Every structure is written in structure tokens, then in C-alpha cells.
Image (cartoon, rainbow, N blue to C red; front, side):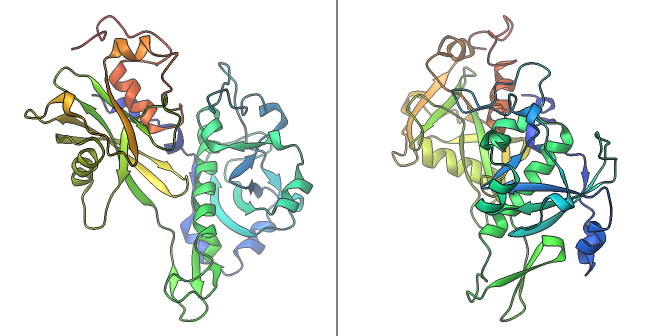
Length: 341
């Protein structure tokens, strides 16, 4: 399996300098507000504002994922500071590295998390508020990176309004990248939860897919799970597959990673082989998280395309599956890759 297919994962792209040194300046937001090119990225209930011309590209299809036609782009509506007068939280996201209409390279971008009332006042048309899962693949590198960064840090703020040690309220500092406890001055920094996601292959190069208890029973994806304390990524791969599928795998190989701020993860992609002494037919779904498990050949993925729902294009799971498949899942497998290899 080639890692080249995972170099440009939708949510791993970015064209922003996070400018971490500026975060410590006490008057940072006053300085940014004095710059005429500073722009606000408004966020409401995890959704970002997109331009009116982007609504078609930002509209999900029947499977909940974007249906943009070739060439369509979803573009963030970044606003002058005077357009957004209040926010629950403000975070300095950094400076852009590319030029956009009305937004020269080097423009400062500030996240503003809005209340329901502020969002409705700013833009009452809910079709203008886009979900990252839907638009992640149809945004520019700059906008995909900004949206991913904004959603991740906003979710962290929402879960850290109080000190985890004593329960005292926390105050936002350092440009939105630190929260400090009022009681003991403890500084709390953003954290990301690593999770492994694995393409398990048997001796015939079939791919193992599972159906999660929280999904409809026709939706399948790669097996995944969080890394536990004191555990390496490779050990997590072996443990998670055994826990969820009842079989042991060997030779975990790193493929790539992608942030997944739903709410606070980074997905670390691996491939692994079923151990030689393991019977492929002895799969045992754990019955808690995973209710069904199936091996798929490439031809079976294609022939079941109308009956089996696979991961959306924003996810690393989709990229890993397509890398194994040999191309886009909406096309038949190439003759050289068809069937069992």
C-alpha cells in the first residue's frame, strides 16, 4: 500500500502560519483590530459561514456528504472585524500564506464563536452555515485548514470552561490558546486525542470492514479506536482489532494522519495483516461497538456499491480504502487490481 495517496488528505491541508509567537502579546486583539486586513471566521454550532455562491457546493447529498460538481468550491465568508461585534470565544488562528480576493497573503484570521442570537443576526439563512464533514473536500487548502483549526480549538474551549482539577471557572488567555484557572493559576493547554484507524487485509488481500452500532446497518468502514494511556500506536492497532473483531493482526504499518475535530481527535492511519494462524471466517464482532464484520474483495466493493454505504470523502478512511481499491470508489476497479490478488 502506497503512502502517496494520503499526502493530501482533505483536513490535513493548510495555508496558514499559526504565528504562535504573537499569542503572548497582551494587546494582541487590539493590534489585530487595528489592521484593516484582519478577518473574522464566524463559527456557530460547529458550522462556518460560507459565501452565497458556495451554497450548492456546501449542500450535503442523501448520504450526508458533499455533492459538489467538478470545479465547484466552498469558500469561507471571512468578515471585517466591524461585522462581528460579539463572541463567546475569540481565538487568533494565524496569518494566511496565500492571497484571496480582498484578502492579501499575511491577513490575520480570528475565530469568533457565536451565540444563537449573534449567528441569526449575522446570517439567518442556515444554508450559509456549512458543516466541515460536507465541505472539507471542496475547500481550498487555506479554507480547509482554517475551518479544521477553528473547529478543533472551539470544541476544546467548549469542554474546558472549568478547571479539570478543582472545577473553578477558567479564563481565556494567549490569543485563545490557553485557559487559566482562577483558583490556582494552572494553565490548561489544548489537547488532541489520538485514534488509530486500520485497513486489515487477509491472505487473499481482502479488506475487513465493520458496521458500528451507532450507524445504519448498511454503513461500513475501517475499524478504529482511541490510543490508551501508556500505549504505542502499533500496540493500539493490535489491541483494537482483537477487541472489535476477535482476530489478531501483525506488522502494523503507518500510512498517514489527519485531524478529525469531531470533537477532538487525530486519526492515525495504519494497515496490518491478519496473522497467519488466524482463520478469516472466525470474526467475532464485539457486539457493543461493532455489530457486523465483512471481508470485501475489490469486485465486491464495486458490486455492492448500491447497498453498502462507505465513508465520506472527507475522512481518512475513504482515502485508505481507495488506496487499497486502486482508485475512486465510484469507478470499477482497474483490471490489474480486480478480484483477489
